[in-house]
Image (cartoon, rainbow, N blue to C red; front, side, top):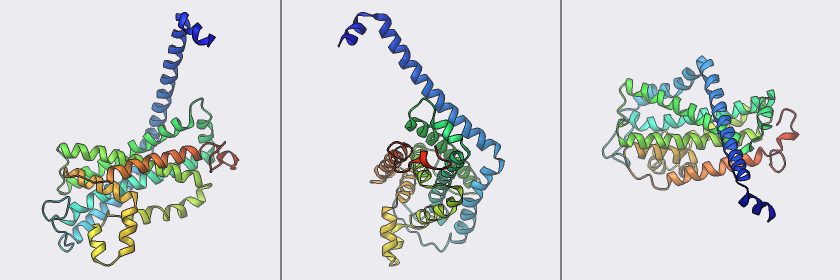
Length: 295
């Protein structure tokens, strides 16, 4: 009580507290910018990374999009007002593929940094670990967005009809950011449980391929139901990746995506909260401080 009374009567103490708060905010923002710049610099230096990120979805678009253009049987189902070619349907799923693979690659980056000691140094900075992980998540989402935009630009260049130059395109851009954040948070969560780089490939095979193929990235849910693949249909409905792709697909055409935004944003909060918990060595289930290369 006496301290609060002193602060009320001492202007210099109030100015000191305000100055300390401003300094703390400036320090946090400086750390955010530094981490994002570091990830961007790494990306620029790895000259083949963008090409490798684009080759996979472009092959899908060129081979499957063109090959099944006339036999896909896609009718005028939502969000489309008329029948569309398969390559048009495929693009939102391939954008999701770019986001998914980069989010998982960020998980590999976290494991590598932790084993090499860089993450231990970063996590000992005088800032909340949740903020440092948020900065890493922002960097991952930014790289995912840049790669997704590069893919869309190439898809437009080869003749894919996409309504991106409109207000709906701006909505789709914001949707892509949300999907990138969710999948980046999932990558952070997975990095808690991957102890060594040798375990990364196996873990990713149980995450990337089931998430991608058991979703609406390649085929509509209605087609799954019609084909009798009931269990795949139900798994796809529960898959967060499905909702990220559907939100983007509906946003491109200015249609109501239903519950998809809530699922994506809810999963983002859950994944990031669990990742922050896991990176806390005092109470996290990962107990990173006890690992040989952990922080």
